[in-house]
Length: 151
Length: 151
DNA sequence: CTGCGACTTGGAATTATTCCAATTATCACT
DNA sequence: AGTGATAATTGGAATAATTCCAAGTCGCAG
Image (cartoon, rainbow over all chains, first blue to last red; front, side, top):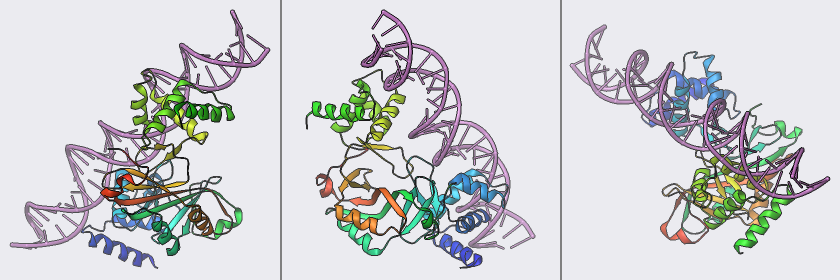
C-alpha cells in the first residue's frame, strides 16, 4: 500500500464519520503507519514535530482519539503506563516482553476468538476482546512478527 | 474461609516474602476480600478509613502494591482509568460492561489457556495472560458470576 | 533497652491526559 | 471572490492518578 493510498483511505474513513482530513491528522496517521511500534502520544508528538513543528500536544491527543473513533488505529493500555497507539487493524493480541519492554503483535486466528466467546456465560455479549501476554521473547523471535517498542 | 484464616494466609504469604504483617496491610486485604468489586485505590482508601481513620493514601498504594507482589491480589487496568484491585486468584478474564461500568470475573477453563499459548510463535514464552472482554451484560446475567463494580 | 531496618505518613512532585477559550482553517453557498 | 457557519487547532491551565521523599514510628533481634 502506497503512502497516497493510505492517505486516501484515511480521508475516506474520516469523511464517512463526517470529519475532515487535515494535515495534522494525515501526518499523525502516516507516522503511525511508518513505524508501527506502539508509540505513546508523546512519542507521536516528537515524531510529528519534525514535519509539523508547530503542532501542539493537545492536537496529537485529539487526532489520535479521532483516529481511534474511526477505527483506523487501536489504543492499547498496558498496566499503569501511558496509552499506546497501534495501526494494526487485524485482530491481534499483544505480547509484552518484560525484559526489553517491547510490544509484539500476535495474530489471532478466528477460531480462538470464537472459542473465547464460548466461555462467556449466557447474557454476556462481547463487542471486543483484548488479550495481552506478558513474558519473555527470545532473540530469535525478534523478526518473526510485526513488532517493536519503546527502547 | 473465615476472617482469621484469611489473615493467617496473609501473614504467611507476607512472611514468605520477608515482609511483615501490619494492621494496614491486614485491613486493606480484608476490605478487598469482603467486597470483591474491583475497587480503585481511592475506593479502598475510603473503605479502609472507616476502620483506620489515620491511614494515608500513600500507604494504601504501598500496601496494594505489596499485596500484588505477594500474589494475593491482582492489579487490573482498563483503558485509561485508574488501576483496580481484585482478590480473585483463580485464572479468570474480565468482562467490562460498558453500559453499567461494572466488571465481572469470567472463569477461564485451562483448555482455553493452553489454546491461547499455542498461538504464540516459537520463542515467545508467556508468564501471564490478561483477557478483557468489553460489551454488554444483560440484566439476568447479574447474579450468574462473581461480579460488581463502580456504581 | 537500644539500635536497625521495615513501615507509615503527609505533602510535594511527576506524569498523563483533559479542558477551555481564543484563534485559524475549511466548507457551503451566494 | 466573499462571508458566515462549523470544525479543527493551539497553548496554557486544570485535573487525576500515582510516585517520590524525608521524617517519624514501630517492632523485633541482640
